[in-house]
Length: 571
Image 1 (cartoon, one colour):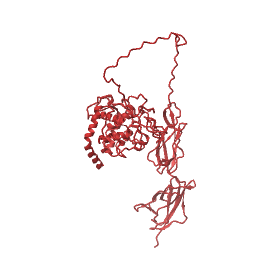
Image 2: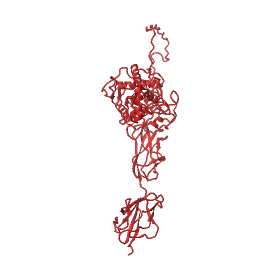
Image 3: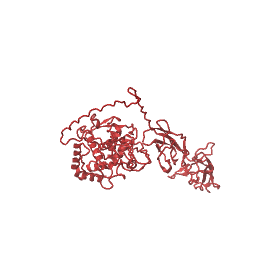
């Protein structure tokens, strides 16, 4: 990292003047048509092979974006954005959660890639252009958008052609991909760059903390130093490869650099909608102007500057003597009432679809599968809802294939079952959480329990008497555990030297085992082999001559008592 950081500083020293000139030119123009100059003096490009981190060429799939520009009067003088003013231009206000996410992303990236010098104002500029700062900060307390922000289907009709890569898990479209969330990532890019910015154990493109950190790491890909104009241009173009997009983002970047302030969530200024449709930030699935369209048009003026002559008004047309209404004059016309639009069903909740107690023996599959029901705002089952099941807790249990997280869609009856859940070797309880993918709806939680393998019988194998002279060892002691007549493999067994009392306790005299340090012990725990058999460690004869007892107890309560005879040594 040190060598890389030094190299970036040397390159920065040679381009500082050019970078300053580029920013100054942009600030002066405040227009999307202003030329941006890269550090090498050429039009910005994506750079050398490998510098663009996405296989599709853009994090957002080059989907549409807002082209509103900031006001000409900047909110404050340069250099004051560190100490945020309390008030200022409405356009300079950034919703509290959104602003916090940008700053947290800057700090996190600085801790792992300080040489990138990621400014949070760049994240703010991209967030403004992509979604209007998450639609004016409409997020919950965790930073998740109150409703999904989806771009149009990238079906090649006016946009890039990107076939579905996530089976609709993030964007609800199993045919084509759509840009998702406040930073408008396409699912294929999110699969590589998704982050958990709020440490909730999930990587959610609809969460501003997750999305802002992912955007920061994406912009810093390779060896970019975003304090250099050329690297910043390349980073922005890798997000959406459009010169107009670059100019728009750069304009907001300069605007936020001059000052901004915090406003309450949900009160941010929303961009002006395009006349051709709704921007993808509305979550409607329709789109506004394409990236190549001009954000605004200027009225043309006469070359001479003189006003155009006033046209001569035409006389009003003569009314028809015969009324067009066959009902005759004075007959009222009853207007046809406009029917109220029928609201579309929308996801309102996910709930347990009858899943009962979840319990399994270590290593076995759970007999019951977890089932979820999705309901609409009309209380009816809702099909094609993406549900994500996640195994949570200190456990090695997993779904088929060893997966801790799986995403599946509900069927026509609104229900969906998770894949088969298999218990691991770790016993105890854990949780499975089911959530409607990409929403902030409450999750459904299920408690699952893994119990230890058990045996209901254990018996010694071999019939020879176990006799040894004091100071020597006994022959190997072997046994076999079973459960319902079948071999009980990998079952815990405890061997204890016990007294001959009515209520036996551990005997502190007589035969013993040894621990790893070679010290005598009279209780020893181990596990049966896969076929239910076991061979005890060496048992040493000790104490006065006589008969002693060894008890074997399985997980499940099965026991067997074996006699050990110690003989006195010869005179």
